[in-house]
Image (tube, rainbow, N blue to C red):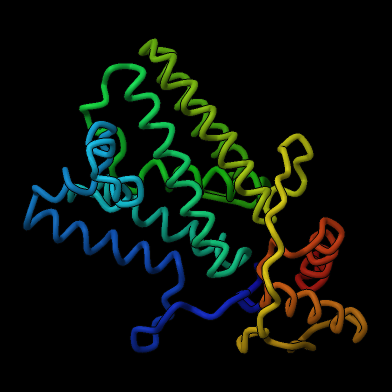
Length: 275
């Protein structure tokens, strides 16, 4: 979303001048986990998800496994990717919906990992740990939402997404890990359905739409910036319409918009950018 459009909710809290929303909160927790696990390695086994451990009472592992980050370049890269893509998605979803979306992705992956681990007889081994798999799903959702947006070296996002999916599929085929291939594909479908529930991927009619219950109307967030903005060429009636849509997002999140309102918001955003 353009920097001229305010976020749909206030941050959870502030550290000095630093706003901490859902993405920043998870990122900070992951960074802290790197330090803590380096000092006390035993916590890695406590935080990571092991199916038999969950069934044995370590129920917290279904949500703590993204914090089981072993210090190293791979873990740092996963955290950076999560922070980068998460901020972009949170601008569209808002603080609350982003939190629910991330939680939904975590629980979906946890259920799949537990089911597969028990069915394959590998329930005693660690199934999920670190932000890597969660970050990958966020990246693919973001790419599906903005397929033509340039990524590294101005490569279109959809190309990067195709490479990520292709490598993951080919790796499973090469290793003849058919169950893991099915898990990966089911994870993609689950992530797409969750994203559609929260108002993303509206251009993909093939993705099932499960409507979320309407939430009570809340007071509009105070950080909504009303137009006209500096340099804006949008007529006043369109500026008023845009402000109305932003108020609705501020009150109830992006998922509160209808399909027609979402398309209209996209049109107004493009006009604001001169596209």
